[in-house]
Figure 1 (cartoon, rainbow, N blue to C red):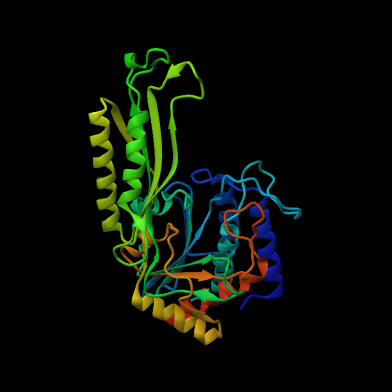
Figure 2: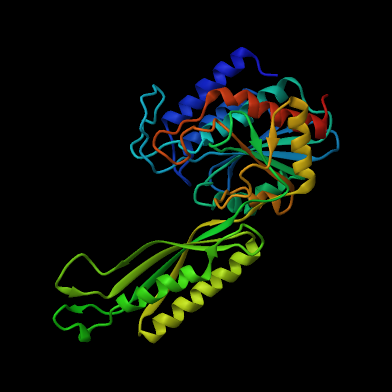
Length: 383
């Protein structure tokens, strides 16, 4: 259990991180701050530089047993915070507006408890993941050779999700967060004088064909195994001028599916149709992939363990609001481990994530820590 001084210090650390947010792939100082705080807890080992700036603290019992990984995120968002709080972001156009600073405190709080009351068997890994917001961090961590030192049997994460009562948790077996991918399509033709457009090759007509064709690939609907959604988020042809017939076009589309396998299929469909239209128009075409998130699929056993822990603690939970169309970079940890994502409410009318006035509610720190501790004790016991 955390003491009052623990909670004061964790709140201070959370607000310190909140003042100095760093974007995906840039989390140098955030990682350094976390390492300094972890060193005071004397874990068995601390790994740094995982998949970029990732940090993992290992608390090992030296007795055979499972490896249980708890994940939090290091990165912030490229959004200007709007807050009068004394701990508001001091970095222009960057802010911890998705709760990652609070999620880190769930792990730091658990680390404090484990430093005083170790587990009986197995080991606990506190995984501070980089680059969650762009979907690159989990894959980079798991692909890092050093990850083999902490490869997990079980993996758990909590994400704050407004719209739910304070301290209430949503979870379920199966799909929690959709797979998603940002597809960039670049079309290149030839510019010409606006008075002589026939001298060039304009992508304008191709763009008007590709945009509705992409959206027709996935219309959303019920979030079942067949769910497919394509959202065109941006398109552009030429420059805002009256004298030049355009020679370049750009389309951004977000693809969403319920499973990773289906993502491969819809991505191939999107490339095929865009390529066909481009070739017919005499245009060159290039593709780029961004924000590539795997689906988060909760394992049945891991979900049952999490629910049992919350029931023991008297924390209300069910599957309200799940599954979600939104994506989360946790699913990769479930490729080899029995994993479960939990969605915790800060209040039904709390500001939404990714908005300028969002801030993590510090009074949820002990709730998240208690869930992680109970899961730990149920799986690994107490020395």
